[in-house]
Length: 190
Image (cartoon, rainbow, N blue to C red):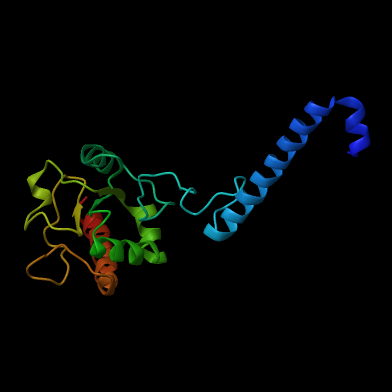
């Protein structure tokens, strides 16, 4: 807009106020832009990684393509009905050992396939009301198998004597073997 055009539209005092407001808006835009550059703030239309949140699912990062049950009781009922073993993963979100095992579990194609096809899956971030789910203590992470007859498979253990049902990322092949045994013995028993 040219000044002569504005002078024709606005009286002298209004013109000064209008120009002052335009200057303030321009100055504000410059300051916000400078502040974003200095603080490396994201633009309003873009979301920062902190703002982008994936929806919380029952998988909790253990495998988004796996169908997870919500409760131990639901898992037992589905296991009995489907004649598939129930695999229960006890973990804590903030536990570094749980996080490491979750990463190894989620990145193993063989575990993911068996979990999808051959097991009823449950992961718990709290203890179960069934004392049989903590045969040697309430530590995390621990993984137990329950057959469709609702018997906790005490024979399928990891390699640690003081925490029999724990697995570490380097024990992933032990876990795979225990999953295979849970399936094989299941079919032999039914």
